[in-house]
Length: 334
Ligand SMILES: Cc1cc2nc3c(=O)[nH]c(=O)nc-3n(C[C@H](O)[C@H](O)[C@H](O)COP(=O)(O)OP(=O)(O)OC[C@H]3O[C@@H](n4cnc5c(N)ncnc54)[C@H](O)[C@@H]3O)c2cc1C
Image (cartoon, rainbow, N blue to C red; front, side, top):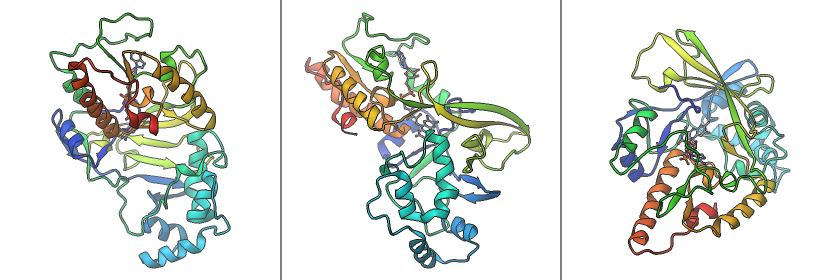
């Protein structure tokens, strides 16, 4: 029940994907309520009416808060091109510095003035007291954990699992087709360079009792070196535990021996990606899938949706010995 690769919450609007995962595991109700510590205070995220009222010491109603925030927004920025400009134009300097600046610097290891505005697409604020981190219709946690769920998926007579066995392009597999979910640059032995990723270091610690009273506590100040602390027993509120396993999470550039977590996807990486995509398109008998195969951040539900679509695309072609492309269109378009 402790999430080794960082906390994972299953959330989706996709009814078919929800039904699919529920076929392998009972999902328990779970609502992700994230808090953040900033300048000695604890606030609710995403920024909502409670956060605004607490932060500015007000008792605004929704319309008042909306009007107030419009006055906070920096109207001199008409065409924001960076993350910082976008945030300033949407929420103004005070909220930006308390909730976005330090966190983003730690997460991405660079100034928000170097990141594209597209990271923050719309106003990241709710003018009510809804503190559910996700908007999705279906949200939950697998009752016996993800390891058990994936174990159930793999428990099929046609599936053989070989652990600790790295697939290499030079391997001659007795396969009609390969679906490759490893890193696209790794497939080509990084011959033309490495795509940039952020990796995470998890510092595990134990606590006797309840350490922070919630599953996720972000740290927005640049002075705290970690981005968040996660307390895993709160991800399974239906269980009872006296002891507690927690992690401090640190973000840094991914080295060759680290686990790649978040694709960076800035201008430089996109150019190298285009190069590898062109090479991959010339490969025969292999389709690149998943977050590493297509170098995108994908939530679990999207990964499963794309896997189901890929299978649907492939099966009739396999039966008719038709051509299967190296990417499904959606994967390259993003
Ligand atoms: C910190 C963090 C938190 C996240 N939280 C959430 C969340 O709350 N909710 C959510 O929906 N999603 C979350 N995600 C996203 C989620 O992890 C991804 O959607 C999911 O892992 C994608 O599955 P995948 O199969 O594409 O990739 P992966 O799960 O990475 O699987 C790829 C596998 O391929 C293996 N592999 C690599 N190269 C080779 C090779 N050459 N040969 C053989 N095997 C190889 C890898 O070891 C790995 O096991 C989070 C991601 C991160 C990084």
